Image 1: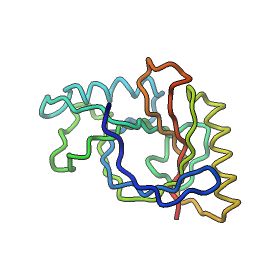
Image 2 (image 1 turned 120 degrees about the horizontal axis):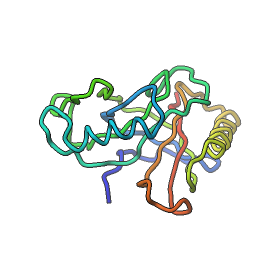
Image 3 (image 1 turned 180 degrees about the vertical axis):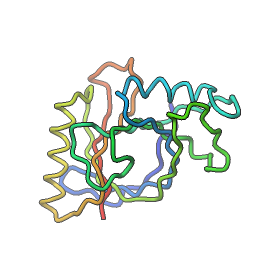
Length: 172
């Protein structure tokens, strides 16, 4: 089992979780398809970095879908695809990427509203779940302060019915 981004559940509201995430470092590629970005990030964690060291894979993989309008970005103001780095690293100790398309950034602690769902996370599924999440937040007077994003937890070879995904957004 891989390390997962660390968070605590603050509360549950109408089928969603409000979580407080610890600060985390992301390795991100912007402006490419998920498949295109994945290759650059995979190269980075398998040794195409300043120390030529392998970095363990973690979960989730985070992406910002193109079709969801971006407001104040959580991760990026354009399509992005990110790997969460293991919690033992700091910005001073994480190996630097050799490829300039891979950017490292540290996200501060933040509070995020999350809705979990199963399946392959196709565009329609993500749009539907995003709409459901937005509706729950509006109904409960919870204000967002960032762009919607998708979190995927399983390797690509996992059968669709066994996959876990989440849509999320930072909240005030």
